Length: 171
Image (cartoon, rainbow, N blue to C red; front, side, top):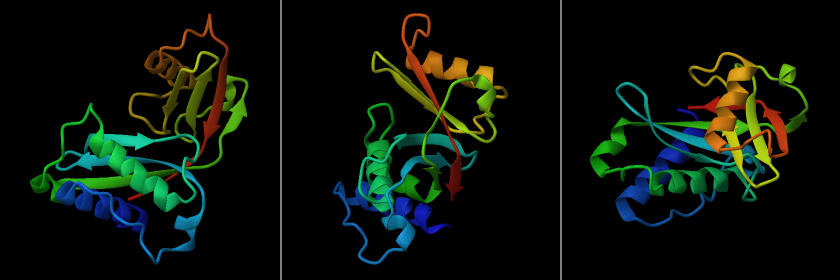
């Protein structure tokens, strides 16, 4: 298990057992001290069913470690997610998607759903983010249509900015 996933697991277990925020680790690798955006995906085994997800397209904290910790707590506390019980903790698997900086694009030809995620942002404050390699999304058209549908953006009435980004997954 990669140490990003270990951090997510440690935070999850501490939070579920104590309902308190854990302290930031004193000793951590240099890359966890860098400022990076990420998403935390929590899966349930068997079957690797997505249990919870949280993240942001831009860094919200000073260090990646803080991003991971914050997103784990957000994922576990989401109103749309059934509360995780202690007994479930051993069956959970953590995937950390670390995002490269967003690159503004002007055309769907600059997308490749297997290589790049998509972030849409409208002038009305609506947004959507799709990570790369999402099941069921094969083409740039699929990727854009899904993001528009999930965000509620009406591209005929709202100005929309498109960004792509690469992701490195750690489990």
